[in-house]
Length: 260
Image 1: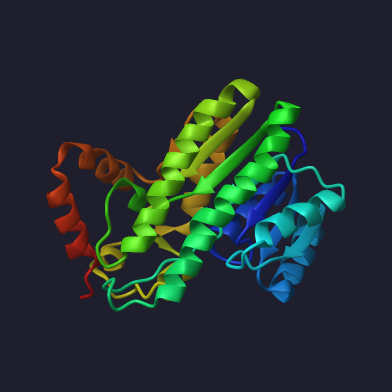
Image 2: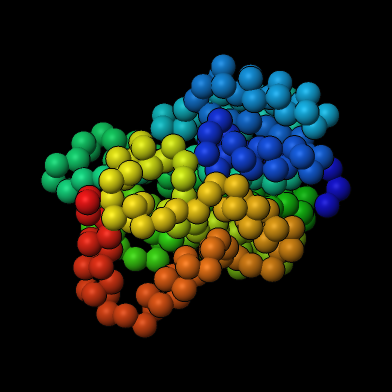
């Protein structure tokens, strides 16, 4: 792959942070997007110094309506053409639906679903016009089944997976590849924010963020997969769900989500 410009949302931590390093290490310029300007500035300085690439900083709070459009307009106004879009920003929330805070779930839908859709539309249309480009939407193994105790989060990731597969079909003939990354439990700040550290799921073992990003990056370069599920254990679990009754699947998810 020749030198590209890669826009990464949620770039300041976790999977987004490691994608930032991975693409910069491969010689690609990056557009770093997250809420914290200070963290992004520090990351940009590090990437430019270590890898001799250009790192653009664009702070944005994607939980706010209109933020995606403003982000697109700012990037476009700077004359930056985005070749690869990594829609990584997202968060979860643990708890029984009647007890969780509605505003947090509305914000989650805004970030996980609405912003991702808007950014895919804005930058994807440009890619279709140029007949080239890549979009990687970070979903989750949560996308393959309902998720009691994280009902809204699981639902948002099912949307991400469905949208990605549909766009891959629509845009493939235009030279634009769209992929969904579906990691399982991964050691990032996500589990802390979602209050999942004490769940059976996270206590049973997690992948490192480095392994998740390495596998995703390799798949992106090969452009052979639309749905990327890192880790053999995760692939086996995701595949087996198809052969199980939905009620049984939902009950199993409930048990592994429960705290120890």
